[in-house]
Image (cartoon, rainbow, N blue to C red; front, side, top):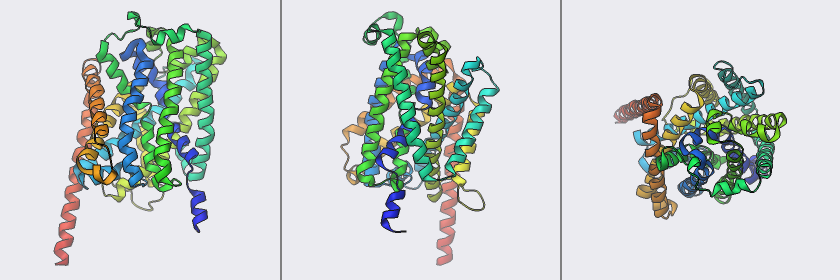
Length: 442
């Protein structure tokens, strides 16, 4: 294969942005508005804007490292470079991997919830997980076809959902009138979160889930055309695009529904907001956009997360299956996402994913500051600001979850502990194996 053919097979900047936004504009905006409203009250649009600011600072570390070292496993390579091939790098790499799988489970359950909304069955404890499992399996089948199909489907569906969500948001804002924009800067006590600033900061934690899909772009390094130029541009464009859409849609929703109505319809708030404004056709359109967004998000996410698993396996941090390696990572990733979607509800999945992701994010920034600042030519104040912001939203979230949903915190702690123990065992065995090989050579 000559250089021209290899370049033709690579992902373009447009394709990379489509894959990035494909992961970001999925469950995030469709499932999380209600969850955020429980914590942040009527300040939902401000919480999403603040989430964009936190993610904007966070993205700097990923961009600096990925531009210096483009690969198919950017985050895993960054952690290995910062902390060495040991327990710390392996643990936080798996935190990222598991949080991405949880994001896929979130997409699957959101698909099921919205698809059942026109039939009034969105609360079904059986049909929602069944549909979630089916759509994750279908997305895995699409990924078996290869890179070009993934990129083409992502580009086409990204256009559909961006236009669809923008149309819903703008129509909602026009229907609500100028007063909707006034509500954004209102200091009305009725819109304030019950838990005050703690609730607002905790709500930002969940908003970050709606943006964290940008990290999958770092895994495209080996597949991206001119990665040193396009990788950072792709991440910035994806974050900005999503921020504008999220602000439009959250202002439209908070204009259409009261905080209590948003919370009551927390898993399908967008469809609920469309009904009083546009009637049944508005619900139908919202459901259609949600289905396209979640399915395309799953396709893009499975592609990116499988790449991360391949890198972790090459680094000896996760096991492979017996037999041929081809598509193993895809089957493992899809299989784990199916298990998560079947076992946990949307709120539990979002909380578990947010905590694991932010812990990993803090480790990334600290690794840049302490070990990689010269190598990647980083301005250290930016990662330090990112760490402060991560801690500022994560601590209130954990405190409030501890009082309202201690079970999810226990599950998170168990998952984190299992990951750390597995990494300790893997690293110990690897050290023993290397010691035995050295002894044999001498």
